[in-house]
Structures are given as structure tokens and as C-alpha cells.
Length: 363
Ligand code: SAH
Ligand code: SF4
Image (cartoon, rainbow, N blue to C red; front, top):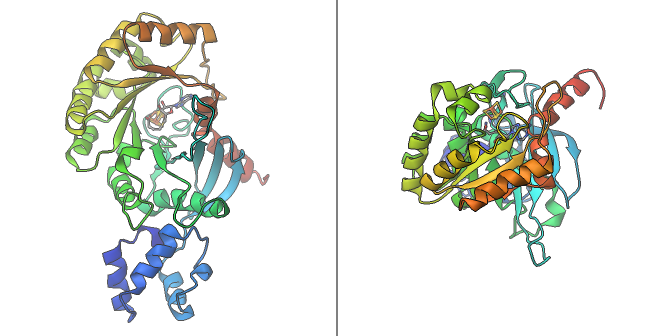
């Protein structure tokens, strides 16, 4: 497998050009095409001589992800299924900004990206972990999900404006279990020679890998952190998230507190509501204490049922009662409505369905 051109840093590419007998100024031109050109192949690099394009294509792959399925329209969420060079599938989801309270829409588009094929953490309610862990994505495979979507919507964007303004690392896999590749990819996407997406516009979601949360608080970038909490007591969390047996709520909240104190205010607690499991009003006081301590907002997400798993989303009345009780305790809590529901349904589920369909020769 050839390395992806998108994962080459300026100094690495300059070094390769020197070795190949090419002038250093080509690095700038190539990086501009790859990261800012929204192009889909070597042939579109108009100011690069054919001889160099030939060398490039025998040393690097232009993209490490290939689109095999796209679902949805530009005004709703769009789900992308990508095939990797070893035949595995991952998915990304593009989420347009909601209309604001005053009715106007903004240009904000968030892309939800995957970091692993499958997941080893086995949360009981989640489709991503259903078939276990397959492998980590390399930095190019993470970056190419972003560049691949930009290239697909090239006609809708002008050269100085990008489609994707925000990233959420909430697709398939546990991002902090692929720490080095993830950080490598995000540092590229954050650079001004690449997508230039601000660190504060990038949210990393984790099920609670305590040592990696601490490590993330030691690196310089101000990435936002979302914690998949889904239970405000160890008793409830243990039932659905095996990781809680290793890193209990008290260890997790200590680590998140460190992150919060070093990065100053960028924590979200994600809480999916699952009927009869974690939707009891007795969870509310515990959740309120945690959110106050961590100065975190709380995102309540109605659960999306997954084929083959027995969990259900509670009624709207139960959902609203839960959120109301949190707000009454002074918590900054929001209930994610239908659009969120579509998005979450995509993560992990689209791939499982597609794998079955594509492997049986349909599509
Ligand atoms: N592994 C990371 C990131 C990927 S999961 C994590 O767990 O945070 C992204 C989010 O989707 C997590 O909060 C996860 O708990 C949630 N999720 C998983 N399955 C879901 C489902 N069926 N319905 C709603 N949310 C789900
Ligand atoms: Fe993995 Fe996150 Fe799904 Fe848990 S919720 S199985 S950590 S992807």
C-alpha cells in the first residue's frame, strides 16, 4: 500500500522532492492542490509537469479512501461510506448547520469522521463494536475523509472558502485508542497549509480512556472533548459500558477535571437515553453534580435502536422530563432532536448494513 500524499508534511515532501531530483518549490504547489484544491486525482494538478505526476503516483496514493455509497441531500445529513485499500469500510457523516432561531441558515458544516474499523470497547448499545475491532486508521485515511468530502462538493464552494468548518470525531471507533494517528491527522487538518480547521472547532469524543485524556491535556492544541457518559453512577454505567470497570466514574471525572482546568471550558457530556436503562430520574442529581464540577454542558440524545440489540429509545414524555429536571437543577442541557437522531444512526450502522449488502454482491 502506497502512503497517502495527504499525510505528507511540507518538510517530508520537500525531502522526497530533493531525493527525486525535483525543485523544492514544487512542495508548495503539490500541497496546495492536495489540501486546498478539492481535486480528485493527479491529472487535475494543472501546473505540475507530467513527469513529476508520474513519479508522485508511483510513490503515493492520491486518496486512501474511495467513495462507495452516499446517502442524503445537501440540506440534510449526508452519509458517506468509504472503502479502504484493504477492502474494509468506514463512514463519515456531513451535518449542515441548523437554521438559527431567527430562521437564517449559516455556512457551518460539521463532518463526523471515523478513526478505526470496528471498535474494541464493546459498549452494549453500539453498532460500531458489534463485530469487534479490526484495525486503526492511519493518518492519511483520517485526513482523506475530510478532503474526499470537500472534493465531492467542489462546485458548491469557492476557492477561498471551505465546505467543512467543524469536525467531530464521533464516527466508528474509539479515537483515543488510536491516539498518535489521530493527533497526527488533526495536526495536519488544523494547519494553515491544509484545511485550517481551528482546534476549538474540532471535538474528540471518547468513552473514557483516562490515560489518553491526561495525555491530550498535555499537548498544546485546544481540542474540545466530549465524554460518552451514558450513566451518572457506576452501577448504571457498568451495565452498558465495559470500560467503566477499568476507569470508574471517579477516575474518569478526575481526568476530565484536569483536561478542563488546562484547556479552559471545552467539555461536553454526552448522554444517550435508553429506555429502562439510564432514563430514571434518579440519575439526574448525579449528572447535575458531575456537570457542575466539570463545568460541562450536557447533550441528551435519544437512543437509536440498532438491529439485533434489544435497547429502545424512551418516549418523548420521558425524554422531556429528564431534560427538564436537569435544567431545573441549573444544568446547561440540550435535547438533540431528529437531525441528531439521523446522524447517530449512521455511525457504525451504515457500515454494518453496507458490508452485508456489498459483500453479497448487491449495490
Ligand atoms: N468511541 C467514541 C466515539 C464514537 S461513538 C465514543 O464512544 O465516544 C459517538 C457517540 O455515539 C458516542 O457518544 C456513542 O455512545 C454514541 N452512540 C453509539 N451508538 C449509538 C446509538 N445507537 N444511538 C445513539 N448514540 C449512539
Ligand atoms: Fe466503541 Fe464508542 Fe461504540 Fe463504545 S460507543 S463501542 S467506545 S464506538
